[in-house]
Every structure is written in structure tokens, then in C-alpha cells.
Length: 535
Figure 1 (tube, rainbow, N blue to C red):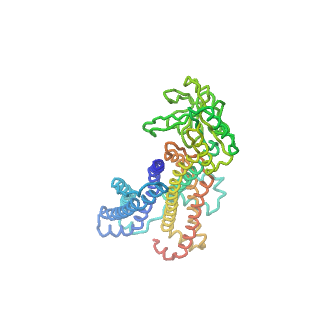
Figure 2: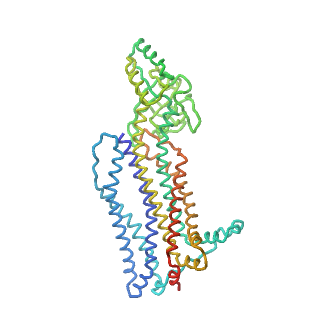
Figure 3: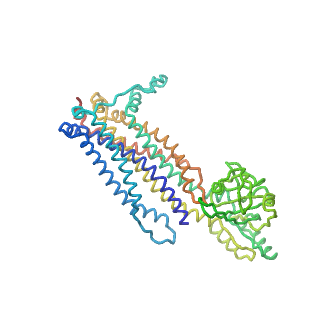
């Protein structure tokens, strides 16, 4: 249990930080670029006083270095001694495991420090060096507005002619500030993708129990018969199977096979089931790509086993030193199974299988009743063992619980990241264009119109970011559920509609709150004072 949970979370820990860093680095890059732009006048003063370019650049580099270093140190300490402990408690909850020990990992800390310098020092150096190409007199003047140009949309006259004046202005402004456009789109897309992936994993984990143990494996118990049981003991077992509490049962041949998948999952237990008919209905539903399959010529292999063995339909699967043709790969999420009919078994093994196992469906499939009935069968002399689905469900739910709590933390981080990105970019957009906004307000635009003038761009870019984020999140989710699933578990690939809706709702709420903030901020700004900086 502990191994499965820790393995899944370790896989998450190898993927999510990479995506989080890429998005966070983009925010840091934008922030440092803005910082250098704000210090443009001071840089001009230093240059006019005779300071060398490299000395001025060193000032900005030092700022980025200190900010990156302090932030990394705080983050490293929180990661080592707070977040690690929280996740450890999540994994070990409900287990008889001692208190975890926290260790400081210098290698990871140094990597984090180096990556923080890349995102904070490098942009400060590049932007400062670019700005200092200008003369001191130019640096002392406000930075000229970004020039506009004809955009592609204007060439589509049937669309452009139907747009209002404000919509045309919005479209042109979006492409005037290409760097901010890309930062907004990819920042929102990254946050939405992370949010989608986190929620998607929770949905996939939550969908396994119903799909596996209610729709695929519809039996509640597997009752194994002793090979040495007398006829009287077998008759007694058959009588027990006729009890009022038993809905239906089917006798099959079953055996466990151990196979070592070196370099992948190690030693795994595979359950082989052999039926006299063409399928296992109504006890097991075998489906491939939504289509029901029959056990006819060859073996039906469960998905996870096919992945570990590296086989597809038509290949040969080696078990017990025998080669078995793979006729189909069935949908399955917990355990490894191979399904055969008698003819295929006799062809492969050269002997006829002797039925030794009962698949049992109960009228009352609740865990408590299943445990009660299992205890009854264990008391029969002909029974060698009983396997309950409740046991497999409990094992899976322990892994699911750990993953769900970990994903909740990552979802929270994704939401916070989205807030930081949108707030930062919106604030920068307003600050950089305050003279432009002052001008249109002086010309008679109302506060709401001024807010929408600039905020409409953020909304359009965010919508594009949401669309890209949902697509990227879908593929990230599919990749993650393959990476984090333990050796015996495959997570359900489908997600609920809430996984698509919640990221959209989250970004919409953030945008609404930011719209209120921008409107409030613009009301407080002295527009005439802002216009004094105009040449």
C-alpha cells in the first residue's frame, strides 16, 4: 500500500514541478522586465553621471540575484520542512508507519537555486543591456509607446468591417504588445493545464471503483475449491452456493502466475481464468474500445498487463514458458488478468483444465455483507480461500486517497499561480499605458469605458489561454495517469464535465475580481498628473 502510494506521488513530483517552474519562470521574466523598464530614468541619470554600462547592468543583475536567492531559500525551506511533511502525512494516513524523517537535499536545492537565477538574473541582464544601448538623454525621457501596425484581421474585410470601433482598437492593441500577449496566453494556458490535470487525476481516480468493480468485474467474491476436497465436501459447497443470499455463480478454472517484468515493475502476479463458454458474462464484462469482446481464438489480456509485457493484438504473450496469442486487450484497471476458453487452454498447455474456482454474485453487494458471506464460505471444508473485491477496493482507495489529497494541494497552487499571473500582467499593462489611459479619459471616456478599453484585451487573451490550456491539460492528464499509476493499477482515462468547467469558472472569477480592482485603481489615479510626463 505504502509503496503504491509513494510511487504514484513520486511520479507526480517528477512532472508537476517542471510545468510549475516553466509557468513561474515566465511570470518572473515578465516582472524583471517590467522592473528594468521602470528604472529606465534612473539608469539614464547614472549614465549621464558617468557610470559605465556594465556598472548599471550590475545593479539590475544584483537585484535579480538577491530576489531569486532569497525567494529560493524561503521556498527551499518551506518545501523541505513544511510541504514534504504534509505530503508524507497524506501518504501514511491510516497506515501503521512511524513518523517520517525530514532530510535536506542539497542537490535539489542547488538545482532550484540555479533555475531561479535563470529566470531572475538572466532577463534583468538582457533587458538592461538592451536599454543601455540608448544615449543618456533618451533614457531620461519616457519610453515611447509601442508602434502599431496593420494586423492580419484587417485583411479579412468581411470580419473587420463588422467590428465596432472599440473592438478594432482592442484587436490592434493586442498585437501592439506581442510579448505581453504571449505571456498572458501561455501563463493562463499553463495554469489552466495544471488545474485541469490535477482535477482530471482526481476524477480518473474516483471513476475507477465504479467502472472496475461494478461494470467490469460484477462478481463480489472468488471462491477457490480445494483440489483434495471429497465429493461430500464439494456437495456441501454447492449447497451453500444455492443459498438465498447468492444471486448467481459460475464455476471456472483459475490459477495465479508470477512473471518478472525486469526494468518495469518487477515480479507481478497474473490471474488466468478459463471458461467453458465464449465469455464470462454476466460476471465479467470484457470490452475493447467500447466494444464487447468474446474469448474465442487466443487470449484476452488486461490493459496494464499488455503495457508491461509490451504486446498488442496479434502478438505472442509468454506465460509459464508457453506462448499465447493475444486476441484482444480488455479494459481493466486493477490487477493483471488473462482470459481464455477451454479450447485455447488445451491447445497451449496440452491438457484439459479442471474447474476449481467459483465467481459469485451476491444479492446484497455491500462490503459488510460481502465480508459476512466470505466468512461463511471460509468455514466450508472444500474451500481453500476466498478473494473479495472489497479487499482490492480498499487497496485502491488507499492509493486514491493519497493522490486526491496531493492533487488538492497542486490544484490550490495552480489557482494561486493563475491569480499571480493575471494580477501581475494586468498591473503591468495598466502601469505601462497610464498616459494612454489618461489621454482617453481626458477626451471624455467614462471610468467604466476606460476600464473596458484596457481590460477587454485581458479577457480576450485569457479566453484564448483557457482554450489552449484545456487542450494542453487534456494531454498532460493522459500522460500523467500513465506515469503515476502503480504496477497493478491503471487509472480511468475519462474525466467528468466538472474538470472542464472548474478551470473556466476559476479563471472567470479571477478576471472578474481583477476587473473590479482595475476599475478601482483607475478611479484613484490622477490622470492629469500622469499626463505631465508626456514630452
